[in-house]
Image 1 (cartoon, rainbow, N blue to C red):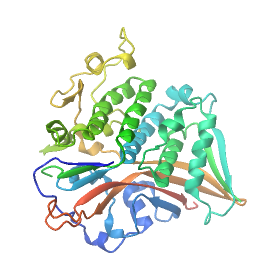
Image 2: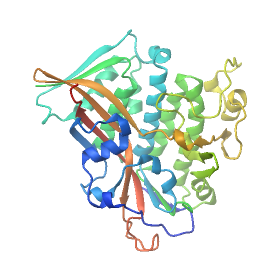
Image 3: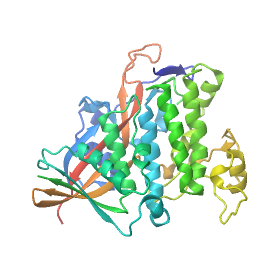
Amino acid sequence: MPVSFSVAECLATSVNLKREFLTGLTAEDILASVTDSEYDRENQILQFSLTGVDGNGREFDTRIKRLIPDANYNTMVLRPDDVWLSILCQFNFFVNANRELLRASFVAHEGKRELTIINVGTRWSLDFGSMARQMGDLINKTVSDPTLREWAIPTFSTTTATDTTVASVMLMATLKQYFEMRFVGTKCGIPRVTLEGEKADWVDILGRLEKLKEYGVETVAWYHLLRPVIARFVHAFDAPDSAENVAFWSKIVHHDHGSGYSYYTGWINAFVVFTPKGKWLGHTLKPDIVPEEAPESMSAEKFWTTYAEDARTDLVYDGTPYHRLDTKNIAPGYATVGLTLDDNGVLFDCAMVAGVIGTQVSSSGDKTLSKDGKDDTVRPVAGWWMFAKKKE
């Protein structure tokens, strides 16, 4: 069952919902806000889905870059899926930036191989979420690693069809350099945290992290950043009110800024270690190290001693020092993959966008948490879109 616990001794504050959020947002509004330049409003959205959304536009704050600093003073709700999808998005950046170096880890072919999913219908009636999940199944039959899809797709007690679709699209985006894909249609702190799902779900994520060790030094470093965090998510189910748990959640993020600098510190940075182009953002790793022991076999302390240059030591968990992050390097939480839609012989250049795309605001109804119990709780929202690009 879910676990809730207090982190800071203060009342939650209501989110300041601005006028545009009160009048409702369209799918186009949300996608344009989330993706910045990725989406042109002349494109045509064919389908979309968001987790936990009942159509009330006032619930959205789609500026995902505000999720970290605005977490303070609001109660927070997290699902295993939200955390896992964030990890998948970063993995997507890493793989695409190292596509040729990692090619043998994923496929045996050179260049790109075409993968096609055929369903009955038109672009207005096709279930693109289902087709994305089918594409995930097809990819799994084609890649060198038969465990890849099982590792990537969440199966937690909280997982919805939207989450599965988001993960499938992220898998497509991660491997887009190897495949051509076609769809054919005939602030004082957090007053309270709720970790949804079962303890076993979070233990599941802990096990999935092991696969990150297979892709080189950077992902081994990422593994060591993630493992202490997820391990403490698991521990929260056993001792939610312990001093250790409260102290951990009090160090989720700190915004330090001044003249000429602005950066975040805290364990939240374990979820932002690659730029969209796959550049490593963590502690500088020494090049050309030839250790006596394979990096994936090292303890965290030995790994960082061997590979890290001048690692910060103001926040360390289980032998892992956490880096600081320049605020301009906050990465988006979505992945994009292009594909061709054959609508009964008519071809369309399309794309799918999926990820953890914003923040949903809800009311706890609990006046012990905030002054009036309204608009005081935030949770990540996962979603996906399928759209046909405008013709040049």
